[in-house]
Length: 207
Image 1: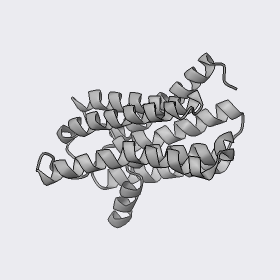
Image 2: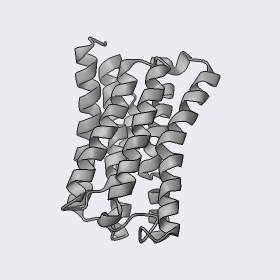
Image 3: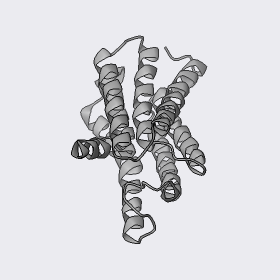
Image 4: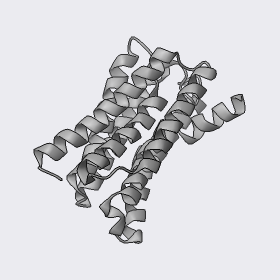
C-alpha cells in the first residue's frame, strides 16, 4: 500500500498540476481545435516554467542540504521553493498572455498563484497539503470550464474526484498530513481556481 501511496504522490505532485491543467483545457474546451504544434508549444512552456525550474531548484537545495528531503516534508523547507514557484508561475502567466490565449485560461493560473500565496502564508504557522491544493485546483478548473461552456464533462469530474480521494488517503497514510491539512488543501485549491475563473469570466462577460 505504501508503494501505491508513493506512486500517486509522485504522479500527482503539485509541480505537474499546471501541466495537467493546460492538457485538460486543450482536451475539454473549445481550444481543442487549435493546431497540435501550438498546443505542444504552450504545454512545453507551462511544463518548463511551473515544473522543471522549481524541480531543479528543489533538487539543488536538497543536494546542498538546504532542505531535508526532496518531498519538502518539513514545512520549514517549503518557503523558498514556494517563492521560486511563484516566480515560475509569474513568468508562465506572462508567457501565456503573449500567446493571446483566452482570459479564462490566464484566470486558471491566477487562481493557482493565489492558492500558492495562501499556502505560503499558512505554512508559516501550520502545514497545509500542497498536493491537495494542486489537484483541487484541477477540480476547480473543471467546474470553471463547466460554467463557461455550459457543459458537464462527467468523466473528467468523476476522475478528478476519485483521484482527490486517493491522493488525500495516500498523503494521510504516509503520515505526511492530517485530515484537517488535507481538507484545508482541498478548500484552498478549489476556491482560488474556481473563484478566479468565475469572477474573471463574469467581469469580461465570457459565456
